[in-house]
Image (cartoon, rainbow, N blue to C red; front, side):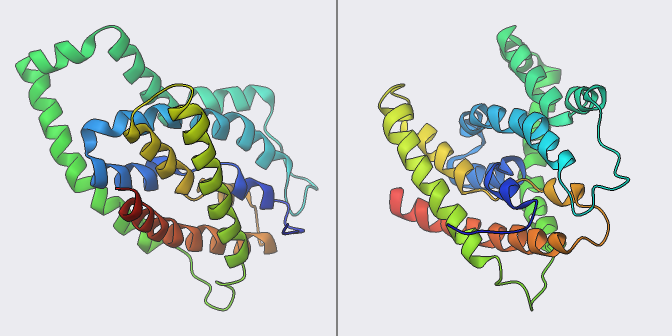
Length: 231
């Protein structure tokens, strides 16, 4: 097992940046009409990120001296104000109340849904373009996190396989697209909020940024290979 003195190292094995990477990949392969499967799985991931992971990241750092930590009140505010969680739970609430039928039956809201779908088709390639532009590459140190990235991808693929075999298929009997959603989420790199919590000129930040950049590239490659094999 890899060992690291990097205080933030455990965080890169604990979450998925599903919204930015997983959603575009899943939609491009299976269509937007099946995205709800991945969104359902992503609920637990988002709750974990904004409650557990954010708390962990706030407690670690290169230099704890004089570092102001988030109070419990601030953490609760941070969770409640999260746009991801707000929109997700609003969508669930609207669906439970039967709003889906209303939005599709009403001409005005149906037109808005159509326009939103058109914007989504444009937005997805733009998201990947922005991600590629924002990736930080330190060519001298880029391959340093390669073993850790490969370990993460291998572990996540194994966990996804076990989850699909014993839970998604074996216990719940869900369809194959749910299994593809599991693979998609587990292939995704860790959340991009990790570097946000690394303050100042911390030497750990370079490793984390290179890890994320390399993981993005290898995640996309892994997704393409895996979907080619499974579909």
